[in-house]
Length: 64
Image (cartoon, rainbow, N blue to C red; front, top):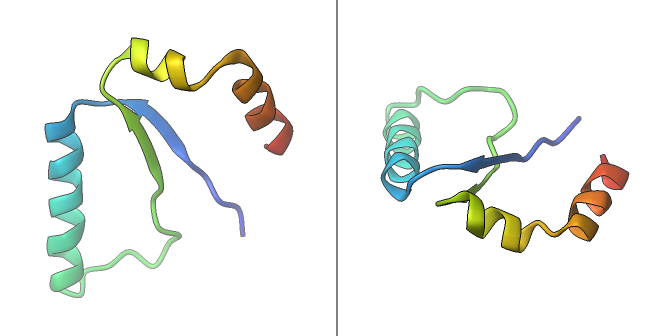
């Protein structure tokens, strides 16, 4: 079982829409049997780069 985290730059509205779609699919029992999606989203590149420092990126590569 491999876990993946998707790291993206995404505006909040798109993230909310994705969440609502997933919620509505679950309510209809239209749930994908694959692993749940895990997202780590940032609103802009500046914020992403302030959080994912070079040392943290190295850590992620090591853990990968």
